[in-house]
Image (cartoon, rainbow over all chains, first blue to last red; front, side, top):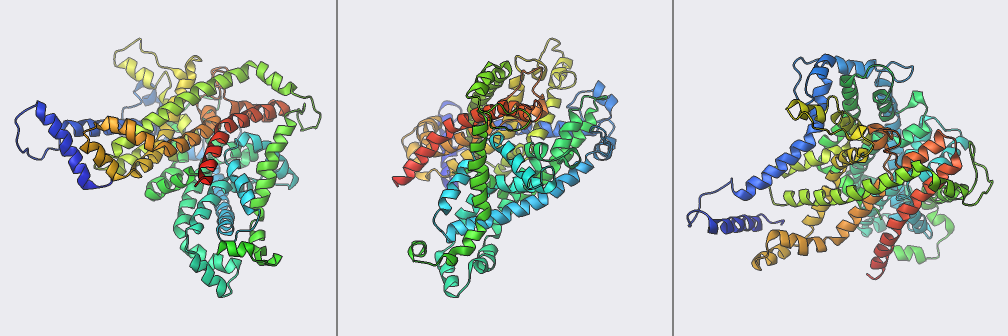
Length: 313
Length: 299
């Protein structure tokens, strides 16, 4: 179905069948409202509305006051737009004893995400490069363990990592979490980079070797500049993945270093006090905003990232 | 050339930099993935409580596990949630991909809309759907206010159907990914197949069902493995949407493990439960890896 011409044929073919049973024969004027198109676009638009509805309800709810929420319908647009819930979610919402809002979680998440993305990509790209261009015995064995490890449920490895981090004195700190993200990002990213570097023409590598370039020189001067697109894909993959993480955040950090997702869950699902649905929804949007922005800005690269992530194994 | 490097009698230091650079990978593979897994399996045979202790008690933890009603609920939920989400994600994902593959206008827009929930975390997804399914303000109250007074749809507060409430949210979040994979698979189908089918006058749905889908077998299998290994891990979504409630009605194995390790301070029980999770993943992954590996070996 990749060729527009064949598609035209398909469209006219379909309408020709419909023609036999209805109306006059002969050449028809261009029809954009064929039964097929109505069905096709109708279904797609219906599904699109369904997919967009939660986002719409989130935004609408976060802009209403509580009295309006109690009386009205979650789908109706706000009568009186108020940004107070957003301010409250950002700066005043309470988790336990702290009442400084989601902002703390946001900055924690930034502090976790930035070094984790850099560390995991740095490690994985070097791994991928070593695996693709500098094969040494036993490297493939470790790589296979890594790929198999990608399928092991995290719950199996959570506790041993707690022990490892405790031994090296990083349990509960942001750096411990950075290590954890580097570990669990490694299988997919290494695979991503290995496959990319393996597709680079070998002559390039050979020539550089003849010129006397070593491991790091080839990596920094030749491979790195060439692999920029794949680095962007990896960054997209990691930023959304690490920002959205909940499990590692809740296991390996303490309440004052909780990432945003954990704090959001604590704010919304806390049992004390009156439920302020508008504040909850504002907080939810705020937490989803970073990955959403990454998604909408990156467009096709995001798709490429998940497709790359999907071909594990 | 690569083979030459490998075969040439090099001195150890020639590849030394590559080996040094691979240290993080080796450490991760050996100590975390292989070592950590072995450690957990080993300690699942002990009676570790607050701290891990090597005091072996055989299969007692597993016996206890399978006697716990909460674990039974968790497993039942996982089976219902898992099988339904597998089927629905594959069917809906494929249908959406097939619709998008009709050379329609605004394909990018539609694809962007179907995929955006995938960028959101399970926590955000769970909280949104918790709000939409809120019986006092959400969908139920809206339908009631339209005149259908007896309408009842409160999955998150009804222990009989709570798992379907979670399923709805999971489908909204994950179907876009399946659609994307399927679309990539459909784009990989040779144009001539379609031409041949059209010349033979085979209706489109028949072409899809009997020609295209069998051809996309590898894509389906990969997708299946991805969905399946995600299903076993389901945790954040349940925590955000219901916290396992009402009561223990929406418990899942991953939550059971976490609660026993970090709240109930019954490590041995948590290890046993996580080993069961590992086992269930292996049942899916090992045959698949074997097939993939075997196929590659035969060229």
